[in-house]
Image (cartoon, rainbow over all chains, first blue to last red; front, top):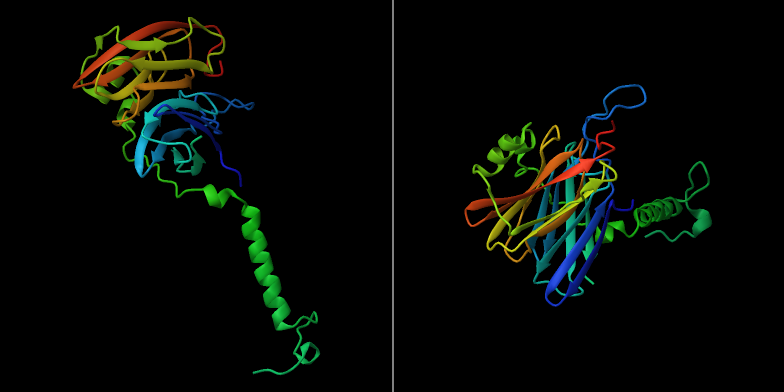
Length: 103
Length: 172
């Protein structure tokens, strides 16, 4: 099964800029379906990014993050060819992870 | 050791030898693994955990309580916190917001949408070696002040902008 995580990490001049896109409904719990019932909250709570065994970024999210969330951040100490591991967990306990290569 | 040739081996009801059954079983097991595809090769053991997710702060219903629950301090407005937010959000369900700062020793960045039912939208701890910068996309229920908070050396600094929302981000 393909991952829900897409990542582009580019190293340049000692800095690596990371952009990630994650497929997820990020239901806030405030929206009603066609039958008028509230769709329960279903959203990613934590996304973790690891490089060289160290956590380089953590996103703690609430239901106000948009559907199919996007995130961009930047960190030092990585090189082209290194692995960047991304993992997430949502409020229902579902998880996914992905290992991307830094370009 | 069996010295029979294939025709002499006992066969099952469908005429298969034990060897054929074993080979078929192994083949379908390998095919199953292959169908799982390249994914297992770059699927790491998922390690994200909700242990440190700031549950209390995310459940506060007003801006002041959310900030207090998260930082325990009152923020000071600072022009060193740069909040990029549109003046008018075309679509309240997807409002691009980014924060960066020139403050030193930044330990975290948080984003609050004052008029949202739960004002705390996101919280980003910043480890050393990571730039104090983040770009994300938020839902805004209606026109609201958006606040960027930066924790730097035992204090919290903030910057805010009013973002007008014409089509609300909560499906209404």
